[in-house]
Image (cartoon, rainbow, N blue to C red; front, side, top):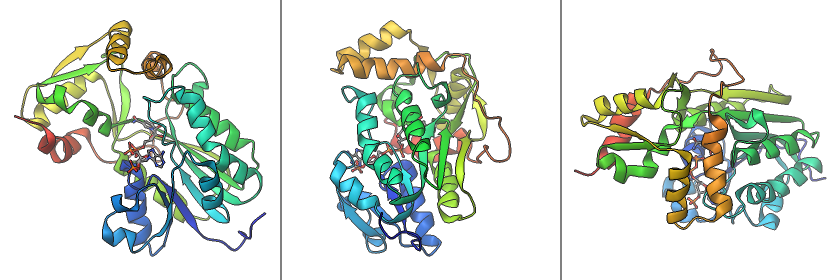
Length: 299
Ligand SMILES: NC(=O)c1ccc[n+]([C@@H]2O[C@H](COP(=O)([O-])OP(=O)(O)OC[C@H]3O[C@@H](n4cnc5c(N)ncnc54)[C@H](OP(=O)(O)O)[C@@H]3O)[C@@H](O)[C@H]2O)c1
């Protein structure tokens, strides 16, 4: 076991991501020098790079992760596995394995895991099953503290089809009439940073991050129409059409099922945790869409 009893080190994975970048910013503003695990430090802005402890490497490199998290008090773990990867569930679990091993060995004090709504089902939710598996593996390590942040559907998922939105079309395979929680990843970063900085929690904690309100896809299209100042029409597609489109884009069968499974497994899903003071975050979709999405659309 490494010397970590006196350690207050905080390690952040994916510091260039939507959530991770916000976490790093808040830690710096709190006077902390976080350790960041980053594959290309040049993707951090210069001011940030100068203030963090850079550990350069790929999160799929087990030796790198094992070494980089050793002796750390609290690790923020984001599964970096793209949904497009072949065998996404196995890849996510394999990528997290060195963190789990470090936690089991007592080389890590606490872990904050970026998990997802749906992980509570454990199986049948496509690639989200991997987050459920990582939750269970971390639970079994006996680590001092593990926090599973079961996050809602990210606003930033809308950035994946800028071309469609530029044409005025929002395509989804989700049930268009089913309300589900939507969240700004930046607000998730706020919750993560607060938890990383607090030394008061221990044991196993599950906390949802539901964003400000539940929305159906019809309501999302309406909100976007108003916030973007252009008509956005919802185009609901069935599972088979979604599969065909993903196959046509060249995705391997396991990735196709990992993605389609996230929508089929979420059908009718009601979040395990209620919307309340702890799980609600402030940024509305309308404000995000106006500030972040509108400048990115063509035409
Ligand atoms: N989208 C949703 O609705 C949703 C809901 C719940 C939970 N989640 C979880 O949220 C996470 C994504 O968070 P995000 O949106 O903040 O991320 P993001 O903005 O999509 O960024 C991905 C991050 O992963 C890094 N990365 C990718 N592959 C890597 C590798 N092999 N080694 C090291 N770093 C790697 C990227 O670094 P580079 O800068 O080097 O590319 C980047 O920092 C996923 O784990 C997902 O399961 C998502």
